[in-house]
Amino acid sequence: MIRKNYLIFFLLIIIYILKFKNENEIKFSYPLKKNNYINKKFMIIQHTCLTCGLFSFYKVSLGCIHKFIAEGYIPIIDIRTYPNIMNGFNKTKINNWELFFEQPFNYKLEDVIKNAKTIVYLNDSWRFCGKWPDQRVLPFTDVEKYYWHHFANKYLSIKKELIKLSKKIMHRLFKSSKNILGVLIRGTDYVAMKPIGHPIQPNLTDIIRDVKEMDKKYIYDYIFFSTEDEIIKEKFSKIFHKKVKYIKSRIKINYDYSKKVFIAYNNKIKDYIEYNKLYLLNIIILSKALDILTPKCNGAVGIFILTNGFRHIKLYNLGLYP
Image (cartoon, rainbow, N blue to C red; front, top):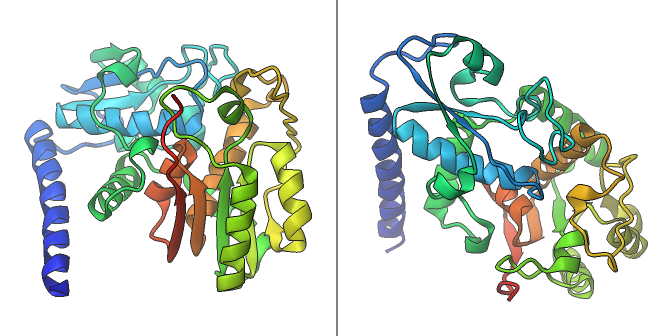
């Protein structure tokens, strides 16, 4: 019975991969080379959302890339030409997306605009792109995890220098230990504003209780802790002391819960490139933990796509905000 289930699982994966591979071969019958713009159709994708964070852009971009490669386009993600949290709400000369991720087939936005003959612009991409990995459907099935993991590695890979930097940080924090519990806690605007249709976040008391139980059971060397909320960080650190490790940041967001405004508009986030870089590094490191504890959120989508697998998973499934 077990062998039969494994056989079915791998057959499904093969079907997914072959289906997408065949679609690409039909649309791209010629070899794709960098800086080759002749007879190619480019889709410049703009996810025009003022309040969306890095991994909201990431998941929607995956869906867009998946859809439009299959339709014969080379998709290019653009966050330069419209206001968003990744450019400080101002148009920028460079496409900051390319500081964090590789574009499909190694093209760059500026080169495409200068050299390509056929360009289609897609605004409000979340309205028109196909299915993307969404936080509301977590946990992914084994097939979905495998598929999106390999798809992202191929078409939306993280810059190599950031991967190298994450490894240096992990060595500094954990030395050679792999016995790490990763903990992601979403606070600030998400908890204060309770956005309709988004996953309900667990309260801090429950998270602390569950981390204690997991630590007692599995005896971790370290707990890698990630949150954008300074209030949560202080409470968590007081309880778990030296076992807690996190990336220290000069950006301190003491969120005012009474005002209930989106964190994107917080005046502390002046160095938006550094802020998003640290966020991405946190998600990379969480994805490398032995075990994970996380609520449903866009950061968790990134964790489950980037990971090669966890031993134990604690995922809070509390429904959606009404």
